[in-house]
Image (cartoon, rainbow, N blue to C red; front, side):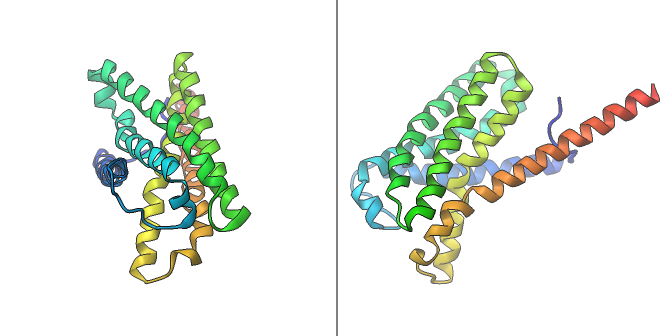
Length: 217
């Protein structure tokens, strides 16, 4: 079942290439926190006081970002199914650890209850969507698995949008404490809602095409 709106092969290749590039840049950058002596940016009290959780979350979240886009490569899935499964298991395990590590960070987040709720929901939904995707593939429900993997990865990609927003704030010299609370929501909720709209639009287009084909027959 096609779950995405119609687009040209060129547009899909460009979009996928940009996704891989952004995921690699941000994901590999996050992996550096596993090395000794790395400074934390931003150096906020809750992050400094929970260094172990932050390192665990950053490293596994970075790994999930690096691995995630390859789950959507039809060429990899068709030509190397064993590698596709291995990458998928690596992605799931990275999120299991990264998602659990995100929860104590969320509960101690600067910005009060609003920020803490936003980050905590991100962590819980991240774990939940990935678990549901895993359940569907184990039951051989391929189309549902792909939908839930998209939902999972759009939350993984919160690592990209978070850093983009911080970069914009730095470029305009806006202190992060002035918008940190909003980051707890803007780093993931808009793109999650956009994905739901995109998938619904794709299913509607598929239904219209099927109805037209049946009528023509």
